Image (tube, rainbow over all chains, first blue to last red; front, top):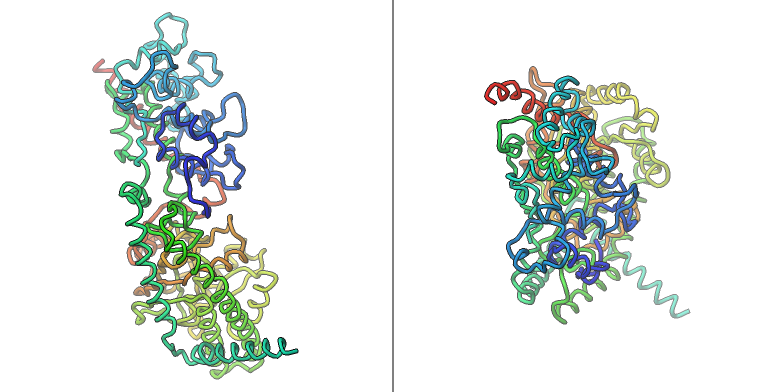
Length: 196
Length: 438
């Protein structure tokens, strides 16, 4: 418990983070407190172990993959801007965002495409832009553990890749992935609303 | 020389006052009502402060401070509902959405990690350390706060340190002296007197106000007393109202001296570090202890670690395998006057004690509960959970199925397997049905 009162000004680069991610002042503050609470040894950044200690995350079948998304390019630390950038993918899409948006600027982090991209990366471990049959199998295996036999899993993986694969290369590219989910309410399913 | 004389006079008056107003009444278990008056004044001041803060702060910020509700909007529907997509119920590419959302939700807020940090207060209690969400309000409030700092550090702290010092010294000396006597009922009576007096002095050293409820259920000899754990002070709070045999590891240093002295006067159960690992040995010794009806009830904290007093975590089943009657006790601290939770990863013992002694007071409620025994066909884990629910309900705490050891260690794989099982049932169990309808 710090003895200082907390202002957004105290968050390093607070303003630029707000602009980049679109979080409100209050939400950013909440996330900053959370970041500091997870950073038990007050290092100023989070390591994999800090995230692995969250019980509810450790029992999540995709827990390790989700933690991986915080450490792109093999890095071992994530600072607060990096933390918020990942969280921003799950910011709910508000109507005001669409109205205010400047078409020349890059898409906000919580756009439909970027949400889909986040999910895509959970599958695509080697970051080659395609989900191969093997990668599909690996994710399936994570989600079912030891409960399902190899044959059943392979048939599920084959079926899924076949249905989504349009150009017949045996793998699911990002565009094919997005197309197969075009009717899905991605904005709602991949959103976490922070109560002010 | 005059200065030294003056200092000597002040010291002696000070000590006489302390002796007369605090030590002697403690020995007889009598209260002079000074702490009650102190508490009344304190409550009035804090109420005034709360009103000033609410006036000075715009409405929206006040709403923000109700942290216990949770900071994200949760969809608590079970996995089936969360995963249902367009088609039947085969595996879909979008199934990852559900797990990733749950995962990110856990990163933003999880029910366990927040239990290992101090409870957030709804309104400020004029202590610097709890001033997280509150900004500068008015000059008067700041002055009162400043006065509070002076009072706490310059008046209360020296007094409390003196009392603590006297209390511990008396305890060590008293128990060693009593230990010299041969075993007899006189020895037991004297050791109880020494224990109780020193505990009362130590509690006054913390300005502790304790309310005991349902004293008729106070743990009896030959039983096991079980309570939720928030801080090392829990022990003090309970021993002020009755004597217990304590269980624990032998420590070095000051704690070790206290432990060795105490065990001379009355049989506590101290284990060497190496013995603690051997569960059978531990169970055997505890069984022997409670089999002897004349021995004091054992005091155990089954959570195994300090939790922040808003919830009760998993009880370790070891204490419930010993048999005998369990006497549950619920302890709930009032965080408004001082935070008793010991965050052992953040503070060591000395800085923790310093924080306690510079708080306003320690106010808590202790509820004794009717004794419970293990029923037929109930195993140790179920019994432990039953006791835990009873304590949680009585103390107004939430129940969490997690292990307090999560503070330090990783979670068990069995929990993850549960989730995987549920998911597998959905995609494989229904797979054969859907392929017919396709």
